Length: 154
Image (spheres, rainbow, N blue to C red):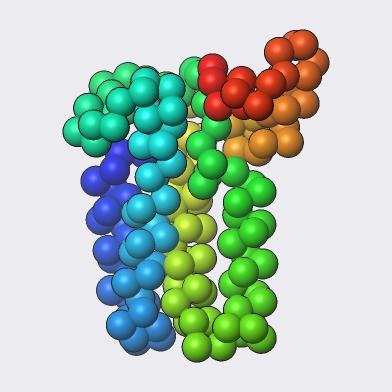
């Protein structure tokens, strides 16, 4: 999904959630928008270039939907860790619970938007290899190409 759409959706959701989260609704925006920072990390890792503008244009101009690229913050394992952090924060970090909860809602809204977009625009369905380290590792192992570095490549 295009970055501007995530920006708009996250902004609207943060505004709607303001009565519930107060000023900490900004964390919903951060979770919903900045989760795409993993695309930049992938660009740095594969292209060996730190230029944010070039990374943005690379992802904008290249259709990577057919590639089996794994983005760390877009994996089921990361979603589970965030959900656990959100659930445990009330007991262990009560002062930060609202911010962590808002951040979690932002991440999950982002992922839901990505999955809807992928389902609607890529009629092949949703490929689990793109959304799970475990599934990606099994796939690479079956092809006898399993290495840590191949987890992040096409």
